[in-house]
Length: 117
View 1 (cartoon, rainbow, N blue to C red):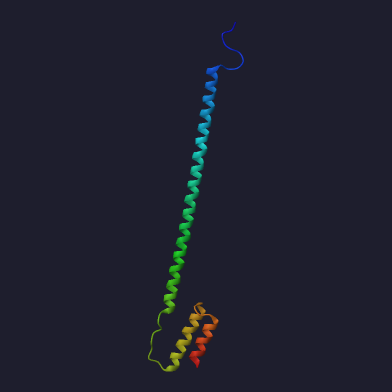
View 2 (view 1 turned 120 degrees about the horizontal axis):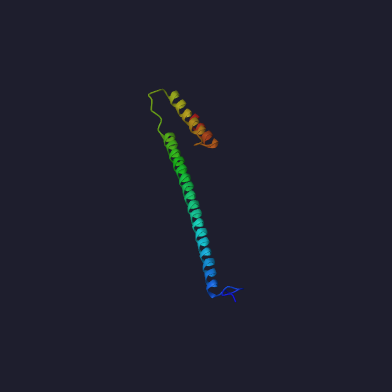
């Protein structure tokens, strides 16, 4: 008669098999969890970098718009010239403001008519 059992494993065999399965499941679960955390962290870092780049671009555009507005609002130099040259300077300034988009067509026409009358 053989000393070993044939058929299903005994209590110790079942416990060992269960331990191996549980250990493998824990290792795989930990690896998957770690991989997902790294993936989400990288996505958050990328989103933060994109948001920062967009904010920098908006800040730069705002600074440029302020600089353009200040340049457009800078007073024209006063010259000791006859009234005709003064009128030409004002018309030129109006044309510049219109070409920069600061004055609309209607505003430009109204200001020009006021100067010429």
